[in-house]
Length: 346
Image (cartoon, rainbow, N blue to C red; front, side, top):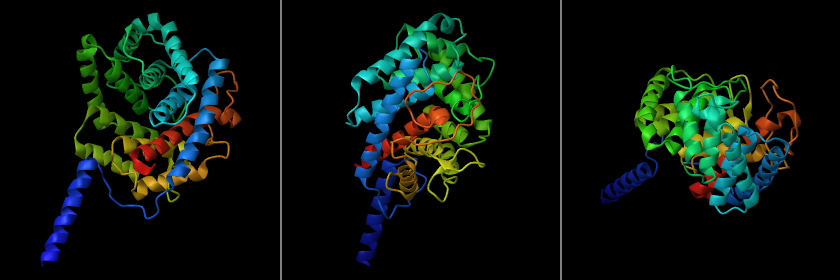
């Protein structure tokens, strides 16, 4: 009897510790075979080189900012640097400056509520990149937030100005990047108007129905920023988890097969919100899918679904006309692997 009581007490204590560590966790199924952390590190190092070349190549070819070749690589490089990986410091600084200068050229239009090409997606992703690169609020970021407050103010959310799935087509993504930008760079004088738009967004998120994985990912991430009730968060996370395929990955939608873009973005969302532990089967299987599908050159290949609207140019990233979405996919995959290491697998 004493042994049974002691055993019950130990199990209870362990459960309490797990809940404390993962307050939003929705599953506790552990993986039987943990992935070798060195394999994860090697995959990240290979990808980093590719992403650094791609961001530099894009900046060489174009003065404009891009979400796929500036914002996403900046997020990866900055996080890799934070975790102690060797990165090209000059290139990281250059990409952040490149992003800032692009916004600076549109400052007048931002103040007038017009923005630049790409509208909310450009503004939101650019400010996300600047935040990752260590930039602090100033007159320019305040002007961009002012645009976000004025843009589509007759709506209860933000919509993309283009149809370039998956990254520039979802109102959930556009709303998330706008929300994140306002939260990070909004000033005290803008605070009340930010609060009003956030409340509108809460109501929209509660009623809107996600159509694909991109929608689901950024609905969950928006809920996290808005700090909604745990029951709603857990329900959204469970919906995402239920979409994991037999190969361990996630699909962009029901008509496609698993790929690095969907898988990486889902894993980042689940780990950012601490809905799964890095040792759980869900995360380990997703990580294994990414490791198994990485190309020898360090990239991940995803086929583009977007209709071309600008003159094609090479950035040095593989996969030719699929290079932009593949660069974003490789960034999401790398971020997911970095989350695996930061969660204690290194």
